Image 1 (cartoon, rainbow, N blue to C red):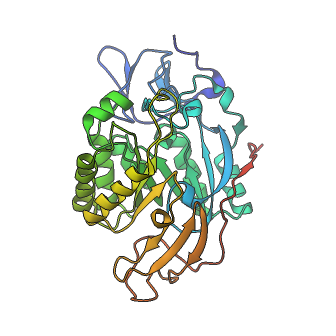
Image 2 (tube, rainbow, N blue to C red; image 1 turned 90 degrees about the horizontal axis):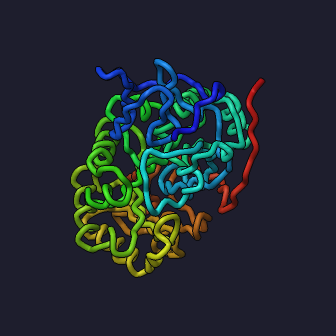
Image 3 (cartoon, helix red, strand yellow; image 1 turned 180 degrees about the horizontal axis):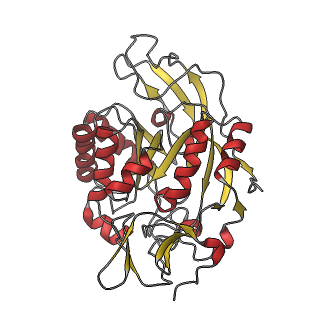
Length: 365
């Protein structure tokens, strides 16, 4: 039975319509949840109260933390800068391998300890010296109204906005949501619909549609992450097909991050990803023509380094999330051959480093 929706949770939600049988259909994502009064959607945070849809996590967060932007991961979006990260609760996917399952699968709002208005968040980001805000931990698509309001007040203070998302969203909300974002890391979980259906309860095509939309119709800076799970999505054939699709449909300048799986949630019996698998995947993607391919969740000097795709010069050397060398010109060019390096760059004036700083942000009176 659905947990009752209290008055404090009832913030109006967009993207829904009436059905002939009296139910309301949520039009935010391809799940198309159809709800009677009092029911919640599959994401658990969007529900029906009377004759309207509400978002139950508006203004409520599972916590705030200042991170290096490289942790999102974003390697070509103002490298070395700090980013204020936060999420809420719930998710519209059902990944058996979720790394943040205590938040994304939470059926209790006890996780939502922090409450903050969009104005309070933007002001805190500015006071903390953060270049940007990240909507992360759980998928910001499901708290779109909250994220979009935060983005508006952040932009008024010249603070960038980043969505860390699985990209599982319908066309109209996709346009509205990403119009408020400066960058996105899209989690491309696999390159087969079978994986999406069996392991996430979703489908592949809407995610591919989101990626094509972002690259073809917006100015949002995009990077992609794929978590390689042994035996499920790590075959050379699948990685080759995915890399070829990215090169053809999105372009070779899109950075791709292959990340190592660690046993978690409902996949505790599958072993962690061998480093050799990530090395092989990176080489397959490079052979497919992709220019910027990285390795995550493992310590790899080569897999963390940004190279010039033209002359091969070392541009950014990273040790986990710490930058050891930085040679990109302020205008985003290679200092040796002057080729433009894809991404968002500015004069490098030091770095935030690998630290992680939890912060408390309260609601404005």
